[in-house]
Amino acid sequence: MTPTPGWRNFDNSPSVRLAKHPLLFRLLSGVGLVGASQKKFIAFVRENEINFADATNRLPLGADCVQVLYSCHMLEHLVPTKAERFLQEAFRVLKPGGILRIAVPDLRILVDEYLASGNADQFVEKLNMVNDKPNSFRKRLFYLIVGERRHQWQYDAQSLCALIEAQGFVEAKALAAGETAIPNPGPLNLHERSHESLYVEAKKPAR
Image 1 (cartoon, rainbow, N blue to C red):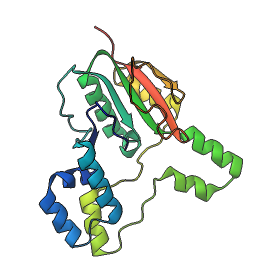
Image 2 (tube, one colour; image 1 turned 135 degrees about the vertical axis):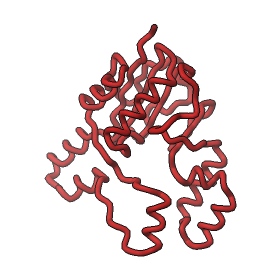
Image 3 (cartoon, rainbow, N blue to C red; image 1 turned 90 degrees about the vertical axis):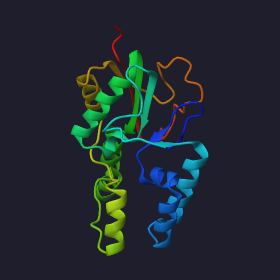
Image 4 (cartoon, rainbow, N blue to C red; image 1 turned 45 degrees about the vertical axis):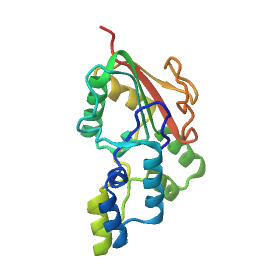
C-alpha cells in the first residue's frame, strides 16, 4: 500500500495488527511465521502510522464524517457480498456529496493482453485467484493467521460502476489515471498501479 500523508490510512493485513503487538510479533518471528518481507512491511506500518480496519465490518469512523474515501486494490480481495458490505460502510461514513474513489485490477486489460498473446497460463496467473493448498503444518498455521490473500472477484468499468450505484452512490464513472473529481487531492497518488488499474469515482447524494 501507499499511505497518503495527512490522510487516515487503514489496512486489513494481519501485519498491521502485529505491528501494534510487539510480544506476538516476537513470538511468531521466533517460530518462523514472519518472513523478511513481512518484517519489512511491519516496520513500514510503524513508520507511517497505518491502522488496522476491517472494511467489511465497521470502519472506526462516524457517520457523515469524511469528504473522500479512497480504496486501492482491496475490493477484488472480497467476495461480492462483502464487497457490498464495504460499499455500504463507505456510504455511511462519507458526508453527503462526498466522493468515493476505488482502484482495482482492470479485467479488461487482462483480457486484452490474453487476446493479444494467446497465453492462457499467463492470463490465469495474472487473475491471482488460484491458491495452492497449504501442505505442511507451518503453512496451514500461517494460513490460519493470515487468511486468504488472493483475489476473490474481478471487475471491468461497467460491472464496478453498477455495483457501486447499487449501494446508493450516484454518478459512478471510470476515469483515466491522473483524473479525479476530488477537490485539491494534494499528495494522493492518482496514478497508483496505473499499468493494471481501473479507477472509478462516485458520489454520495447531497441532501
